[in-house]
Length: 223
Image (tube, rainbow, N blue to C red):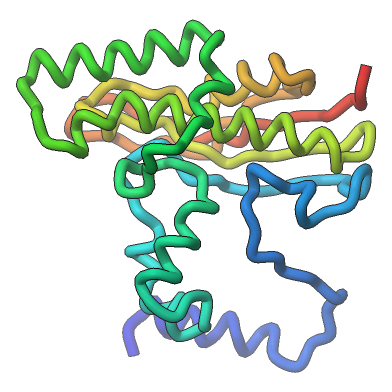
């Protein structure tokens, strides 16, 4: 047994036999929380959403998902993927419209233009590369939709914490995820209490430090 598996085994032994409060897990679309949760029922949210990059989480977790019975076959998986935030080009569909939620946010539009300009300069012509600019807008649009819909289920004064990281996966154009999400949240009506630096990691491709941050928000309630 390697060191990683030994640590997992030790962690499981620590919690075995203990009693914990009852929890409920919903398999649902985070952009449509009102379909699952009652209005004004949530005090706090702590989460780490996908980052805007080319990581398809359904591929990296496929074995576990099949074993746990989350989906039965590829057709089931494809239907499941439509309920996910658009964070990579392998999960984009022609009917997607989340980008409309950020059509008036100039920072995001400039970012998408910079990615498309870089693609043209580098003469990248694959189908996935051509979607980099669009998936960037769909990602932030999906998060804007998420923030907006959450206001219907949050209690006034609710606190939210989002662990997110900078990315440069799309042709080395820097995406300051935390800063942009804070801008979107403020536009929706949240108060940005702070952005805490969690850690940094060095990106060899861009020779820059990428920040992983915790964006802390407060929902003051409807005006």
